[in-house]
Image 1 (cartoon, rainbow, N blue to C red):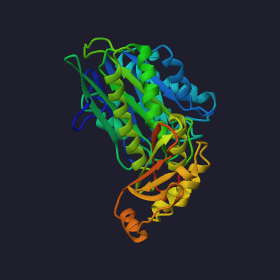
Image 2 (cartoon, one colour; image 1 turned 90 degrees about the horizontal axis):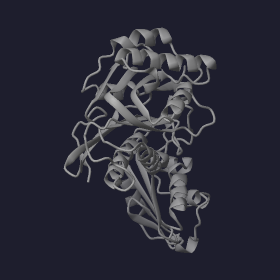
Image 3 (cartoon, rainbow, N blue to C red; image 1 turned 180 degrees about the vertical axis):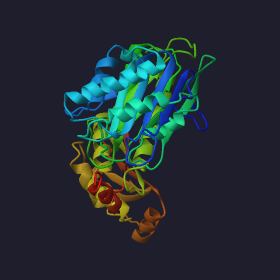
Image 4 (cartoon, rainbow, N blue to C red; image 1 turned 90 degrees about the vertical axis):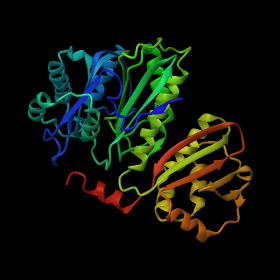
Length: 399
């Protein structure tokens, strides 16, 4: 079982350092350029956007991660370095070179990530001036976390520790994301560090499972981005017995816990959001159909708008379920809203509308449960309500 580390971050794992500076990439005076590095070489895994439009950092890092190793990540916010032609690749490599020179490692061991406005070249003069000023420290994970934020209103970080036959193994992670978010990754960056000794093949498989379980079950607004990536570095300094497919359950569960916490934090901090929506589908035909159904409901604009208005219009939930692609028998369907059954075997259930409105109004967490009663598939997805503030934020994003 994973134990939460109070005030934990990505540098909670042994041998990891981080730091950030205000380089002036953002229009506001905020941290916007950061480095994470390990004091020892790492096994590395990555998951990237499924968009056919990919940012230059994604293209570069996707190529480097195939070697299964890395030792550092350099990241900026305020500019996505996407859709700027060959210059983007040159600048992404330039960022890696600058970070590598600072840490004294090979540029090939540096992964790169960027987030922000698309179609704007990186201000490389500011990056060249900023990277040498970054102070890498054991406590720098918190600044690293803040430096990757864009429209986020709060940092998202977590660390846990597990016992592997008497050896303490740590996993810490940070993430950013608040808008342009939808399953199959989203406008999000996530970086995870561990001091575990772990096989590279298992590390990649474990990360993919954790991402599918967590980040691929989040939807803010139905849009995705060219910049999405999740990196996992493991430096082996814990000295545990090597983790592989035959003994990796505890590591997988801990990694799932970190990613799920970060995914829920992203959903809770959706642009303009006032409520976290959690959609659980039970007894679907199989797990794939449960995932389809949960994601469709969590991503429905009509469901999101109803939740924002504290409107117990459960017909919108059923409508989203019906077009999800999951098999549904109306006469077997039960629907619950904040633990109150609103539909029983395809028919309206008796409940107090006034009490339901009050429950929605006074609760920042809204729980939707759908029992399909067709099999043993189960899945949970997360989203947030859709507010006027979301439109305000995104109607003037670059102006």
